[in-house]
Image (cartoon, rainbow, N blue to C red; front, side):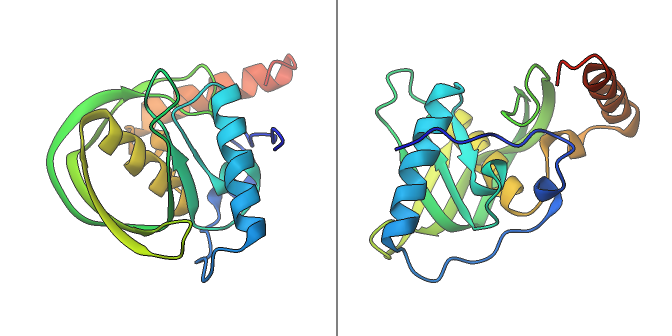
Length: 168
């Protein structure tokens, strides 16, 4: 396993849609292991392949403090969402920035697992939020896209300032 570099906001790959994965290969399995290592080291609760520079519809999630409830979603698709709520979110591609984002509190997701089997899962609360956040990355969306323009522009201005002083 190896820790990978996380692409930060402003990197063009974060604005490109990911491609469907047709078959889980040994390379995909290695990538997933590297993604978990990278996510845990960051530390974070989710990571999508575009965040490490790979345009494949793969994401990993583990919201447990013990790092023992991990799961992988390949080609995830939200089938149903209920009860939108506002909660604060952050992102490994936007370190240090947080905002209250409106998302479904309960979702049903269809995805493929590492054994090439189609699965369906119902999740709610923080896990549902994390899954939606990672699926957004696969669709070239970033959580600040949901903010009013003035808030998003304020964050972008702060990022520009951080880049100028070499702190990004």
